[in-house]
Image (cartoon, rainbow, N blue to C red; front, top):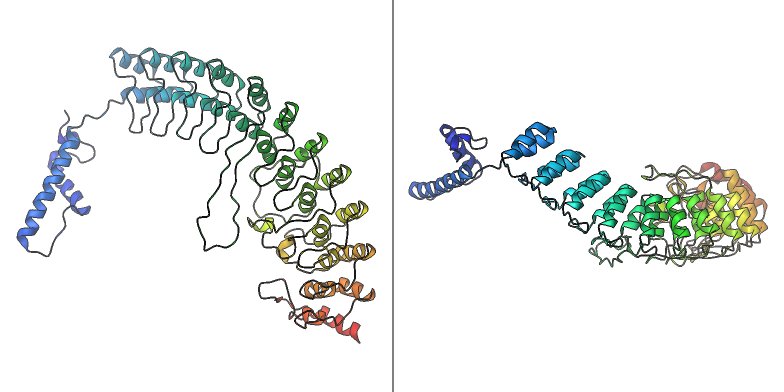
Length: 533
């Protein structure tokens, strides 16, 4: 039995006063205002408690961790000596980790075998639920896995959230490790408990194509679905819709989202449902596009995916491809950048060639997630079409492709904004095209395309603003001049009585919450005055 002198960091018995200081510092001994007698009693009682606690600590036998330390060092001589002395091979550290855990983690098959022969617990789990088999699967060590399984390790043991050994092996991509587990009875379609995902889903998302083939060959369900989550709203103070992942994913949906092209190829060839959608209506091709994985999207289209599948907001692949063609640059890089051979413009062409509905309109505004998702966009809302999106960015190549395929330039959003107004600048803010600001010359060409398609030059939105209001508000002098030369009404008034000149002076606005622009454009105002004289 250890003495007080050898207990922890408290030092010798002579330093016991420091433990009393410890008790006082932790408010176990607290002065009172009730007189000396009461204080003395409380102090004695508290000191007695501290003394008993200290004594119980001192009486506890500390675990003999020499074997674990020897394994950590890789000291085979010390390990053999300790095992010959019959040191407990399953002794644990404070968190439940055994010597076998350390041997497996270090990929030391020889030491692991010695510990197993000595009776080490192959199914021991530390406080985090980690077993030696889990660590062997993380390392992808098939020989270690085989040794543990032959010694009685449970091939279907799971971590606290249901992650099986096979899932771990699938994530690492070591096919031989997975084969060993499957031979010993690992369930190929077992699901973890948090999202209900399978080993095949994990392998597909990590783009381990060989692992995907192996699991499918062993009978994995190519169209398995993860758990559907019905999130309850936790806050009523924030009125905007918040997007949370609903689950309901298939291996193909996960692979497409991650840009795992090789996995997508294998899954498609193995009977994956190409037109499957998640609970939000997002298909594999749409998911690939909005995540910038154009090669994956192109492959899926080549395989016959329906180009007109739309999510619950009405966003289909064509709208997404047009959107991505001039998506604002992010100030943070994607965590999963995949180089593409195809471009978003290539996808627009492919979608149009495969019969994508060129006039499909959004059913509702996009959900608010980030600025790049433009959930706070005031014009790309219900009724928006691919042409409207292209016109806002003055994306001339996309506009030409869409118009050539019959895009209706007269369709407008629920706010009455048509492509001409979009091109001229109605509802445009600087952050809408961060890093991809349209050139004024492009805006003029976009306006010309809309007029050639028959759009009414003086049409007004629900606020009464015309294309000229938008151009004046943005200070696009070339657009103002072009519209005026083609017959725009220079003194048109919106529903608040503001004219394009007011817009140029920063009075009419319409893009901010206060309906005003903070940047007057003197040159535009001067141009309008000149044109009106």
